[in-house]
Length: 260
Image 1 (cartoon, rainbow, N blue to C red):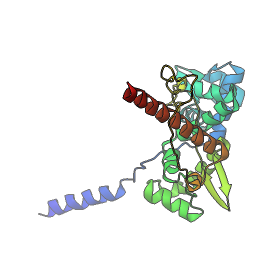
Image 2: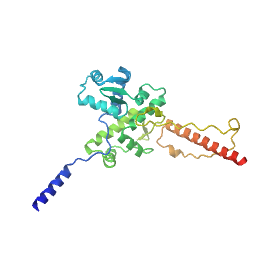
Image 3: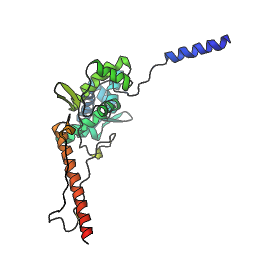
Image 4: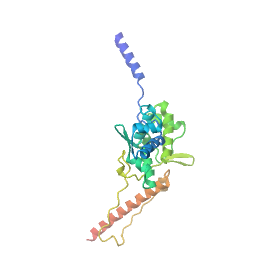
């Protein structure tokens, strides 16, 4: 009987000592550090560089934790890939350092931010709503995202600083919002870039040069755009226009079928 009680007490003590496992992990360093590392690989090695060469360029030991954690951070943001002891910049990184358009760069920076599970979860939760401030933000990170209490301050700082670097943190009336940038081509291949919507189908025969006798009324409430920047609003309106064209063309097809 006494032995059973001792085993139960020991089991309880082991249970108490078990650390709380975080649901969402996040990097040791912010996005700015990941960009710095990836940019060195892109510029000094034209996108391919050995770990030893990069470490020497940074004045760090290749085996040291400081260097390894910075490389890991760049990989977590989707900017670097590793094969053996060779580091390579990803297509996402090239969209940032060698963009064809500024829209491509903005979208790639946004994608890099959202490649971190915790950052994406926070962004999803507060889309269109202001971020909590001060201790409230820390409490949300601990209670809703299971961030360990002694790392919640670091997590809060990491979210804000990385969002600023990505250009997706905006202020309005003293409050901060996270906004999304779209437009990265699906050729990125790095944790899934956002695809551009497919082009609308061609018009039915006989309607390409003639007027389309169909109407579509779309009611847009400006409240739907609260917290969105001008670029995001423009993209949303463009999507509505594409939807309208598709529906109008569908109506035209149905009208032509009814006539026949």
